[in-house]
Length: 164
Image (cartoon, helix red, strand yellow):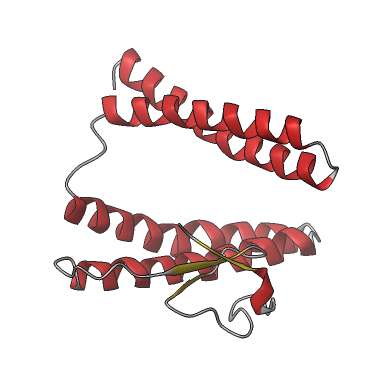
C-alpha cells in the first residue's frame, strides 16, 4: 500500500469517526436544549461525511450493488464471529460489565445485519422498498414491523426510529 492509499484510508477513518462523534455531540446539545449548537454539530458532521465519502470513492471501495452487498455480508459475519467475542471476553475479564453488554448487543445486531444482507441479495431485483426501524438502545434493525420489544436488548417499541 502506497502512502497516498494509506493516507486516503487514514483520512476516511478519521472523517468517519468525526461524523459519529459530532452526531453524538449534537444529540447531547439537543438534550441540553442548545438547538443552534446541535444544528452546528449536525452540519459539520454532514461536511465530514462528504470528506469520508470522497476518500472512500478514491480508494475504489464502492462497487456495484451486488458486490457491495456481498462484501458487506462478509464483513458483518467476520466482525460478529471474530472481533466481538474477543471484546466481550476482555471486558468480562476486566470486570467491565457495561462494555461486555454493549459488545454483546453489537455482536448480536451484527448477526442480524448479515441476515438482512442475505435477504437483500436474494431479492436484488425486487422493486419493493422495505421499511427499516432501528432500536436506539442497541442498534437492532427490524424490517417492515416494529417489534413490541427489541429481541436483543428488550427495549420497548417507542425506542425504535424509522430509517428514511
